[in-house]
Length: 568
Ligand SMILES: [Fe+2]
Image 1: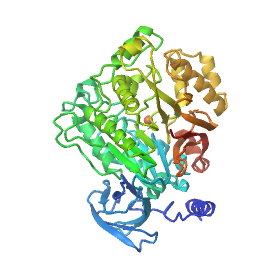
Image 2: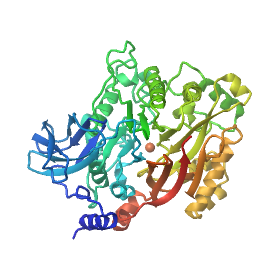
Image 3: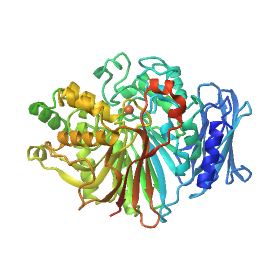
Image 4: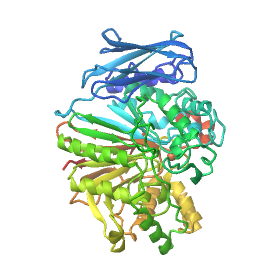
């Protein structure tokens, strides 16, 4: 027995469920397996990447043997590096489907997905989220337990490739051509060392996906003029989102994800007209609504980074500049859609509202704040104020990008008056930062090295961190982050505002900074209580993976943090 079949058998015995479609041996011509994504109650996008040119057939059925076929479709492979997909409609809500994809070489792979229930009933919901995986750290054992968790969907939350970092298949400092970007995406969804954790996950449930910066280039701002940064300066266009580099990055992101390729029409605004529209609003019974936002394509030019965060004058100047209401992170159009859709979900009586935002919204202070929502504080405050004013309950922001998990309730300052009087407006919304799937090193050691480099902590103290146990390291990190945010008046890490949020910590802390993994959100059908569980494995470097592949690939994610929140 090979290891994949053995794992599959063990899972079948453990769960008693049919996992016939997981951990399949993939045909050589279908290196990334299959995926279903972007589902609504009645539609889904089916996807595969075949290296054999010719016709690919898709069959959708209500049984795992694909005998009760309810829909078929075809697509043509013209380029072995370009995946194909089809939009299937006329599906039934709240229904389990199976699908088989057969390529021109005769290979086939089977997948499965469930459509969401219509609002009006509570059926419970369980989904996963993570972001940030580097090509050299494949094949991603941090996802080893995703299939057995029987998820309704999984959100791929940005930095799905690192276009600006060399990897084994594309050893370039910056991907530049269509082929470079395609090879980057193909690399992370292909088998390595006998495992393809992403193919297993992507065939087992519905995928939603959003990009962040590294799908084009580090920290880019789509709404800035190309001249703002030398990487874009040689390209034509009024905005970075007009440049060829942005167009290539987003085109290939669409190609390699099971997403409907939606674009803004003639909006009358050159910032958004005919640009990719990755915003999504989805409902899952009355249990949850999800709002996926693109935080890159339309954002204004970033503020200059704060060089010395101990310099009060420099920090105050950054904070007041961030309160300029002309600056935007989402773009006015997307911001207005998000605000309206949040109200719509509240009016429908949907319990939980998950705002999927690739970059953190909680305040950490001015260190690297230029790239987070707090660098666009006026719009951030307007969003949180609208949630307060419209009394939208149970709003959870879910982000990634930090390569570690930090959970906090959200406060905001509306303008200079709040800033000068040190007034922080409370909300009942909170945020959990998820991931990474694989970014070495994770948040904890990264922050220690930055803090030591800036002289914020003594070298000796930094050295002692690396001698600690993982639990001690997280205690240390909690104190270090709180020491940065408390003097500025931000709330301490954790869900501590018990008047506004009824939360109970079950395991670990409201922080986990030394793991690779993902976060599961589980809504109980009866009580509507939300259980948030972060799973992780011990992180590994590329060198460790190469030297010790068998042990690392077999790592099983364990709970590193878990808490339960009762709905309001
Ligand atoms: Fe990242």
